[in-house]
Image (cartoon, rainbow, N blue to C red):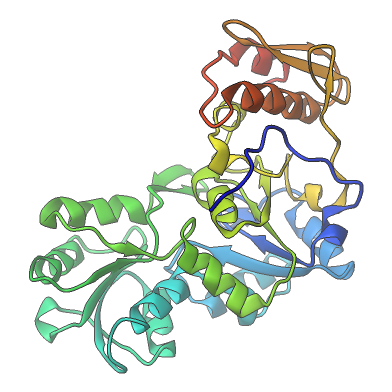
Length: 342
C-alpha cells in the first residue's frame, strides 16, 4: 500500500463522533481494564451513540463469545448486542473456512469464543491431534488453559496440519498489570515445531475485512490503545485512528512510532470522541499546539511553553515524526516528557 508518511497528529474542527459514522473500538485498555470500565468510557460512549455514531467493539481477545462480551459491556452500563462485537475468533474462523472443506474438523487450543466462531462457519471443533483435524487454531485461553493443550497443537502442526492463530498479541492488560497474551502461547508451539501460523487478528487484513463485513462502516474510526495492533491495523486498512492513552502506550512509545504506528489523532481517553482535535502548526522553527512549541534539537526533543499536557504531546509528536521521516525518532524525549508529567 502506498501511503503518505504522517508527520503530525491531525486536527478536526468537528467532534470525531460527528466526522465518522462508526467507531471501531478496542476493548482491553480502551473501554475496560481488568473487567472494570475505564474512567469516562461509559458516559463518552453513551453521548457518541446518542449523537448518531455507531459503536462496534473489535477485540483480538478470542476467549469470550460475542454474547458474553456484549453482556459484560451491558453490565458496565454500555448497552450492547452480540452483533456489535467483532472478535479475532470470528476473523480466524472465516480464514480457516476459506481453506478447508465444509464441516471440517478443527483442533481448538483456546476458549469458548473460538468454538462458537468455528461452529458459526460450519466447522467442527475437536480436542485432540488424534481426531484427524484439517486445521489447528490457537486463541487466548485464559490463565487456566492447561499446558497439555500446547502439546496437542504441537503434535498436529508437526505432522503438517495447517496452523492458524487468532492473534499474536504478546501481552494483555489486566486489573493487576500486564499479563502474557496469545502471542506468548503461540511462541510455545512455534518453538516446539519451527512452524509459522496464519494470523487473522489485528493488525492484519483478515480482521479488518471481518470488521467491515460485519459493520458495513463507510467512514470508520479505529479507536485503540496499542500502536502495533490497533493503529497498525488502521494503517493497513487505510482508515483513520484515534489513540487513547488509557492502555499500554505511553508518550515515549508514541514519539518513537514508525509511520505504520502513527495515529491520526491522540487523546487521553474516550472523551476524545466528543470534541474536535486541536491543530498542530509549524511555528518558530518548530511545531505549536495550544500553548506549547516543540522542536527537534541535536540530541533531544525540546519543549517550551505551557498549557494542556496533551497539546504538548501532540506538538512533540510533530517534531519527532518529522525528523524521523520514514524511520524512528532516536532523539531523547525524557526532559520534554517530564515537563508534561510523563
